[in-house]
Length: 329
Ligand code: ACO
Image 1 (tube, rainbow, N blue to C red):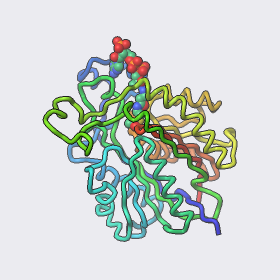
Image 2 (cartoon, helix red, strand yellow):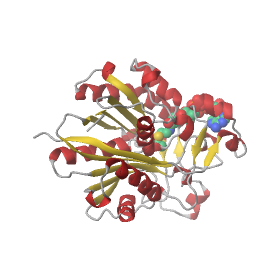
Image 3 (cartoon, helix red, strand yellow):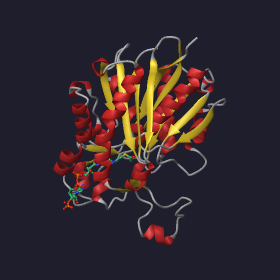
Image 4 (cartoon, rainbow, N blue to C red):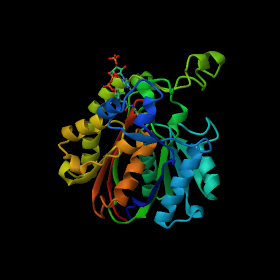
């Protein structure tokens, strides 16, 4: 019997605190107009002091489990995709496992920059297809506000915090994750990095003074890379799934920048009516962006059983990933 990995539950959590472009005008030399024109972002959510990646992950996971009707004690595996985990170790996934009381679950983190959620979806679906596990929780979660230099207008306007989660389970129907494509080009690692605080450049007074614990990004290089890679990645996932671009009912790209999204849609000849966009409200939530967008798309009635969804993401690494998902169990 062929086992498919269906998405049985979904949910997201965004912190209550909203930081608007107008708030940012008070913090750095920027304007609402510049941010909206160059990125499409109007506001983003920022974690409270009491929140962190594991707490937001756990909340998104609880919502996904409730929507799936699956108990935490029935989860076999928890994967947290994040570039901003609580700690280097222990893994954020273990903190989530404890918080949920997922007593029989294995748990690990997966780091592929903003592509982490789709990477996690790919890993989870292999375990389900192989018959190793039945219920797998895949979470994408970030607290990038803690790693942004709030004095650097080139980066601080871009990112937001949040978490999204899905519960995958087996189906005998040809549904769920039909294909995934994973890619990496480590030669571009310097374009987007957090240089200090790990084994290569441990924390010191000097690294703190140099601001090396903040996100460093060559925005233009990342932009060019994203525009180049997205179309190819989606076309590969579509070919692997055995469908055509016209069969995609909803395209859910990583929400980093509206200009990147529009250029990808144009390249793929997808009308914007078929493209889900919420970057205006959340900014770039990195690994969390696709599960948040998916959850909002479902809640707003944009997804119905039998629809083909195409996901694509790109990010630090550099990495990229795409997937075709057929909705329904
Ligand atoms: N407000 C006002 N002016 C600004 C701001 C700001 N917030 N930020 C930059 N500028 C200025 C620059 O200083 C520059 O001025 P100058 O010409 O006098 O030097 C000018 O605006 C143009 O700057 P560019 O960097 O060329 O602007 P660009 O149009 O490329 O937009 C942006 C910058 C939005 C960062 C874009 O390059 C982008 O979105 N890149 C992709 C970034 C991305 O997606 N990163 C996330 C990857 S996911 C992950 O793994 C975390």
